[in-house]
Length: 332
Ligand code: GDP
Image 1 (cartoon, rainbow, N blue to C red):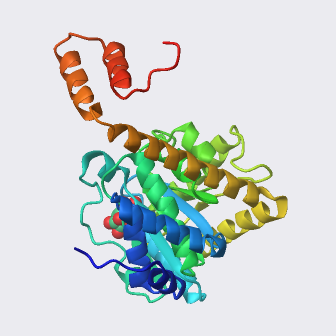
Image 2 (image 1 turned 90 degrees about the horizontal axis):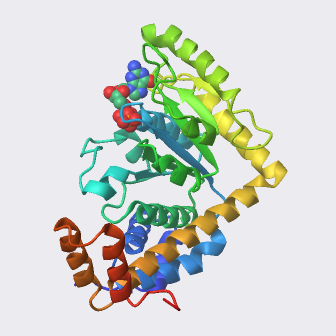
């Protein structure tokens, strides 16, 4: 048995910016034990008034685009300016398969050695929505602990970008210049969500290629509605490895933030973020409540078996589960 921690102790540790305390608090919020959840939710309720001040930036891009390298370089740059930087890593593949495409590759060594940095890997297990909910809570806890910048990194695998866009104030899409059609494989939807696009690895002989990619993306963006009204999504080139262009990248993050503040859009985005947090928490709680009802797991098992044996169609089998859970609509 783990020793129980008091709410007061945890609250003090988080507020003092103690990284061990912050880690314990996030672990509680990620736990599926109901007593841990109860404590985590009390803690979040107590700490909520001190949250909301950080810049919340999302970074997405395919594996190998240079997300870790960029975050490390940006993070060190920001720490050099006296900021405290927290990095939360979402890996949707770990939610789906239990494995992770990030593997155990050691990431962001230099940044993690910094006093003013905090790096937290993805919670594993559970559904993607659950991972998002946990990430939102981890973000609030980091803010309560005094972090000025929260960077949420997500592996770009399509669907997860929309979820990420709803968690952060500014979404950065990281791309790499490649040969051939620059727009290949980049879905329009993702470009529409991005508040800024950075073409990374603009170094060595890739510089002309990166510049060409920048032109192509700028052109493509002209045909899309802006991610934020009144904002022209910048396309910049940078080299995370050499550190070039990153100061300009951060300037764009700050310019975007300033626009959000001036126009009142920041409040609107934050409200929307809170609504999504509520939605995902309700969905998760309702699902957990249904699964915990007597007979539901068995009904799901037998629905699977019936569908496999072609004794029932998928809608029929689903209906039986709904009935077993006592969830049929009134009048039916
Ligand atoms: P992630 O999977 O998106 O997090 O990508 P990583 O940050 O792990 O980078 C993938 C590979 O690209 C690594 O071998 C990096 O060293 C390399 N890389 C990252 N950024 C740059 C860059 O700006 N220039 C060059 N030449 N290589 C880079």
